[in-house]
Image 1 (cartoon, rainbow, N blue to C red):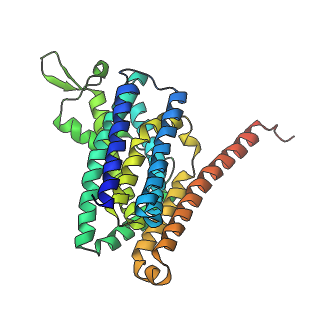
Image 2: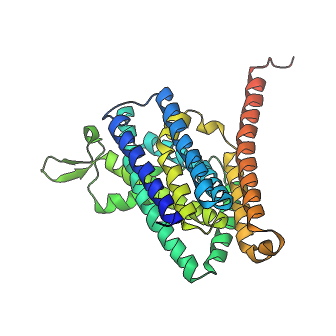
Image 3: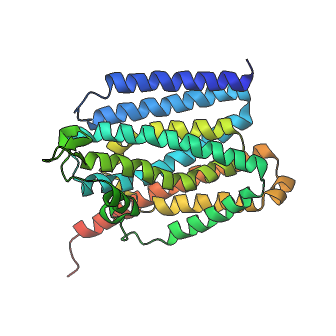
Length: 322
């Protein structure tokens, strides 16, 4: 067994055991996840991801280990951006609290399947046509610019999305949640797809849209399929607990979007100028610089958001000037 095969085997075993535990012990039907449970699950997922980082360092060396950590942090920060859209979807379809954990889990498992397909296709394209990386780089710069300048008030409306309108055109959709079911029978004994079915499809489809940004971004950090697969999947698997942990506070991170946008532009420019970057800097230095930029931009945007919100609150609570 080669080193890569061993790492894949351990990764698969860890994910399988974690999913069995999640499905068997942490996902009781109609159970409501508390903040304490969400914090514990988030901590366990992050701990698993960091433990895998140590394992990668031992088996694959420092360079790949730091590429994995950079990719994981990049995906993790983008996951926070995903949560805002997820909140809008659940709110728009008035999903009951008891149904959210199961719907999220199914949506995330579907997202993992699509991510694996996307990554496999992306890696194959880059291996065959190296110039595709320049397209990815230009796309990241454009996406980062649009994200940085986007109006925070332009909210995503699930009921007017192309995905929902497509489903509505071809499937009989009902407004009920079917008491947790995805398909029920109408008064004519014909199948009727519930709002929960629509929500699951929207969650998976929205993640595909986010994958168009995140996968090229990770490929800008590393060309290793091992790094790309593992960093993506670890970040996605922690998304459900992160949702319950942050859903009450995610709107407080109003400048996180700008932090992520700067990272995307940085990685995009790095991909476009890869030839010259390779002349000036060795690979290890490039990885460390990318990691530092990601950490600085994401943590900086979060702390700046907290600072601005605190100042706003102090201003609102201060007595008005005479």
